[in-house]
Image (tube, rainbow, N blue to C red; front, side):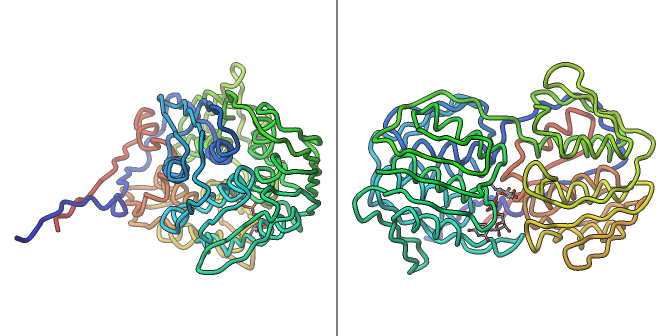
Length: 436
Ligand code: UD1
């Protein structure tokens, strides 16, 4: 007898957005996805409980949760608190391609498994829409720490010959966020000492250092570009609060401006927002801290164009580049944005042009004409941040916009339509279903 399956194709979900409605209300900012992922991976390093508060409920977190469970970690969820415990790790388990392909940050289990078991097999993460994104620093770094690493059958096979990572010295050719985190995870349980130079100083790296120290790791140099790690035989559990998502904050600031509305953002942290708050102030957008961690943004009648370059922290973050590209379309004069972190991060420009934006790209620089009227259109998201910039453009556009492939957005934004709806936006998630 023929069987009929009813499948819902999440990939087909889209947003329908009516533009031109000023937002008004309060948005609670989540914990940062990019901080949560390495912290969850740190649960591999101890048989004790690691309790994480303020975990954002986004697809990338659930992908990593699944992968960790596959490796033997028990993860209990109570709302936004995750309790992870890796009493026994199945050292023979592999991080399969099917799990890793969904999220590049799965590579973080490589360091965690090596630290705990002295060996690991993790599918090679491959390319990504925003650029080649190699993992050569991760591999060279592990080799410098005494690990045998080979890549075959599509997997990274890593093995510490003495059963434990030895430790060593590694200087990153350029700072890498997950590269630094991976080597940290691999080195805190090493037999000897490790020195990591030219590390990434993003707050999400510092929060991992802080949590590992709370677990008993011995790490010196926190806040500088060199970390010195003295390996320990074991680590304890701990309870840790995930820091606010500085990219989500920046995204909602742009949402308030694009809709010509006003928003109050709660659960922020001023020290994470420096690179864009000073820029916004400079172009005529005041951001007021009404109480510690709560910020109020009211769209002024106009703001000036700007020239920015994406850089490592504390420079302007690449993860806000697409959102500020959209912001520039409504500035009084032209802007330039130079992308210095990823080589292919202007995928959204073609889609924004379909909505009337006037942007030209020359090499790694986008030239954006200001005062452009945007009109609703059917557009397609290509990656996480590109998808949110299309939603932001839709808030300012005349008429209706359809944003396809919003599953990209689910990877990093928790309940974005719900948050915008509660502030008066007209946004609907449409989930077409098909019977086979
Ligand atoms: C992380 C963030 C991502 C952010 C990026 C830059 C997470 C899960 N993701 O990505 O949201 O956009 O930092 O702030 O935290 N590189 C190499 N070889 C390597 C590693 C990196 O050449 O082995 C290059 C990359 O191609 C890129 C640069 O170094 O040009 C920085 O990348 P990196 O900091 O590693 O980015 P991710 O950790 O992948």
